[in-house]
Image (tube, rainbow, N blue to C red; front, side, top):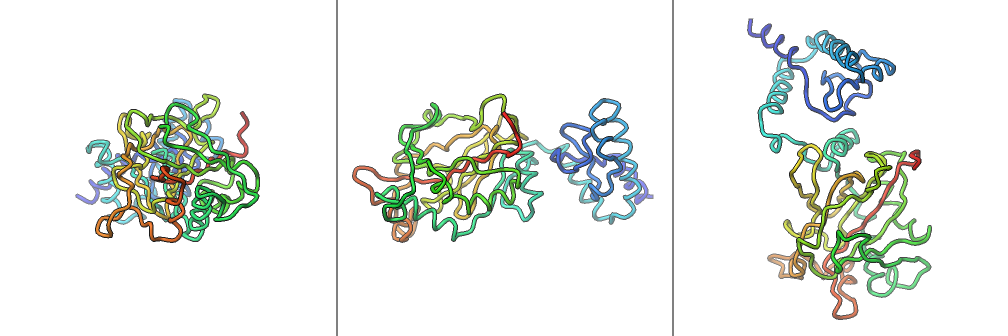
Length: 338
């Protein structure tokens, strides 16, 4: 009796809040899809039916069709699996949104990364240490008088913030020719493996702070603000070069997740990770004091100046002292026309 009751209960509440792109065929609701545990192979809708499902009648018929598919496949799912998914549904419905919202982190699959970006607006990509080491040396050499420690043909142009969302202590060193942009391509390819092959690198820079950043100086903003640019066609990636690890409450990335309106989340910069976020995600630099990035003893070190790859960041003409350095890429969908 109880097994039959739970099975019917499960078939009645077999709807879970997921990213709209979880199923490539089901497009019945703007923020919900039928979670059948076997999607998309069990989805009964073909592509034309999916587009027709945008209408009210289509939504209803599509939901009925997917629910029928769920019932026919339910006997192939273990009882434990039913309990687990039912618990997830109840948690999403009953617990506060802040406790159940998706939290971006380094994922094992491209699909999970894209769910992070589609649901929250931000995802995390792993970068190889060899790639980062080369860019770290280039940035340190550029700031101390050359590129990679010596004069080269690579060209970078230093500018301030493009709008009033940044403090005067921050500067952007943009690659200004194809040869300089090519320096960022190995890392960009690692990002595009998750972001998608339809994206291409359009700009790259080193972001440098030479002092602190007060709360009133760091303002939330969009990297691709014009209304003609919709979601999911432009993205920015940020990765830390110096120091290798940031303090937990200083200089990281604050953003407003799409799935938790009104809240502010923090992405902590870690060595070997890039934060990849949509061009329409509101974000800012987490305020920080200059002292937060000063070298300390080994018992509480934030900056390891003894590391050869990092010494160049401190070898700048006094009184200039680098607080932090990020690597920034901007991507755009190759087939989107403005």
